[in-house]
Length: 212
Image 1 (tube, rainbow, N blue to C red):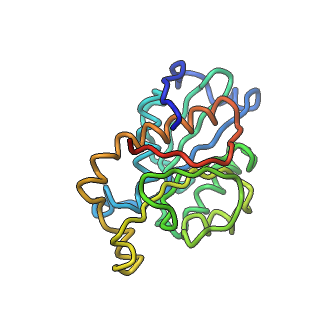
Image 2: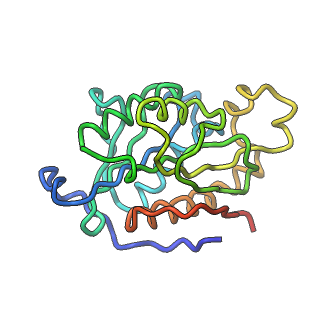
C-alpha cells in the first residue's frame, strides 16, 4: 500500500494569468449534486477530491456556472492544480470536464478522474490511463466529450450486497457501517495517488489495498 505523505503546501495566491507558463493539472471528482446523494457510493469521487483539496490547501470551492462545476485551484511547485466537481448529474459529467479543459487549455494527458467502480471490490483502488467506461455513466460521458486517454483512479465499491440489489440502487445507497469506518484510509490513499500525479503527471497502472 502506498504511504500517504503530505507534500509541500499548495498556495492559491498565484494569479491565473501565469497559467500559460506552467503545466496545469486537472483533478476531477465524479458524483451527483444534492444532499440526498451525500455519502453514497456513487459520490466517492466527490469525497476524495474534497479531501485532496483540503489536505493540499487548495483554497475555497467556487461555483462556476459557465463551466458547470464547482472549482478550486492553487499552485504545487510550478504546476497549477485545478480540482473540479461537476454540477451536472453524473451522466453529463463530460460537459463540465470538456468546458474546463477548453477554458484552461488543458490536454488529456494532464487530466485525472476519481470515480467509483462497481466491478472492483471495496478495499481496492486501481489506477490506469485510458480504457472503456466499465459501465460508469460519468466516465462514459467524459469519453464522449474528450476521448479515452485520461488518467483514472478507480475506487472499488462492490461488496456481497451488489449481487442482490439492482445496480442503480446499490451505487446510490450509502456505505455500510464497516465500510464507512474505512473511508478515512481510502481518502488518504487516493490523496497520495493524486499528489504523486500532481508532481509528475505520470500514473502507473496498479492496484492498491487500503484495508489493513
